[in-house]
Picture: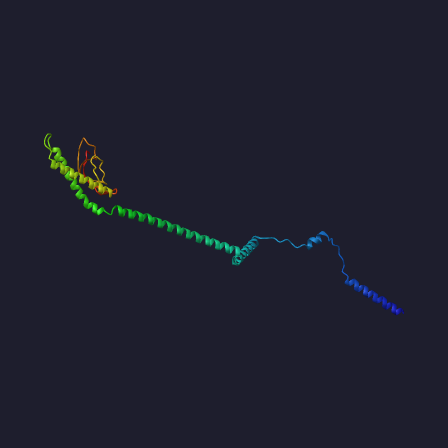
Amino acid sequence: MFKQAISTSTRALRSSSRISAQTPVFRSQFAPAPLRAATLAPRSRWYSDQAESATKKEDEASQASEAKEAEAPPSAEAELKKQLEAKNKEVTEWKDKCLRCVADFRNLQDRTTRDMKSARDFAIQKFAKDLVDSVDNLDRALIMGEEKLKALKEGEAVNEDLKSFYEGVKMTDGILMSTLTKHGLERFDPEGDKFNPNEHEATFMTPMPDKEDNTVFHVQQKGFKLNGRVLRAAKVGVVKNQ
């Protein structure tokens, strides 16, 4: 019985020692200051090469993210916006083409109208050039008849045949010039006007102190205009005092 008691106490001591060995020892949470400082991790120091490498890595990361965004498929809104811009550009181009076509067509209309008017106005130009010679002959006949009538002395009997002939030629000349004027052909007499090289042809020049310089004092042949355009320049004599 004594042996049994000793074995029981021995087993109790072994079990208590085993429990103490397995049970952790609780230390104070508030360790001394030197011990805490020793347990803290050391602070890291940055150098220039390390900063540059870090910046470079950040740039590469941002570029990679941008490339990924560029490679990513566009959204539906971006696609619609792109299509709208393309359509607006196409509309602008077609509008410009249409405006140019309208302007070209209007210019063509104006040019055609001018050409048709010019063709109507100057269709008889060749015929008028051939006709002015006959008008000149009538004008010379009138001048000669007028001079003959003026040469008669006062009191002398007027030659009735000469007078009738003169009146007939004058009437014919008036009717002919009236008809030609309706078709745009006009005769002009520049005597006493300033010399105009666009309308006058100076056949001779002479000094005349009693007349103004560069003035037409003699008309050798009258001029003609067809619808405002000079058909034949008048042949004149011009005063030249300088």
